Image: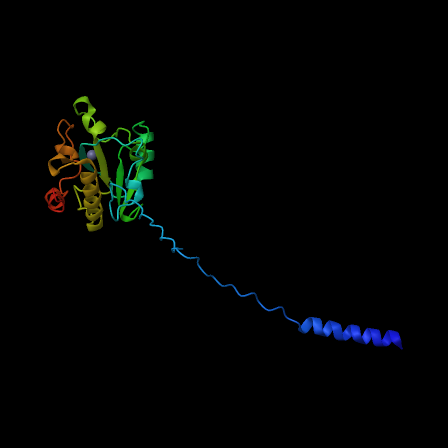
Length: 215
Ligand SMILES: [Zn+2]
């Protein structure tokens, strides 16, 4: 009998234990006399980089430790209906026995790359001399000028409007970065010292291109 009473009391105790709740401690903050709220920390906004080019793809900016001072721009056509940087790279290796594609940039016409797509080649990424304008005295054009090739044969057709838009955007970027004026932008065939060539094609709209540039 006694053990029964004991176990009943134990049962009650467990119930009470479950129901019992400890009150939450109350936290009160009372600053001492003379205490001042801490001044908010001032965080300076990130400094904007010196040269900013809104809307310019990152790979147009060469690695800063390799970057050269380019002084001119030379425009070419591929003289083919199709193509892209990889196709010209293979052709220049196999047929010309060069290190690879001769240009710094290739602008597609929608055949083997996007219409107006700008491809950056290893020459620009490594900031090494081009192989796009031989015959110039001291090889100045390959050494100092940026070579841009538009896919197409502009003896027969005109560049697409997207190609022209991309070309002018790329040239504006290069002009701003290297201080190159319109007078230092050449078609291959009007490059001082270049061999006789049709490049970038008899129909290439040079006047229109220059009207798309500011200086
Ligand atoms: Zn050319």
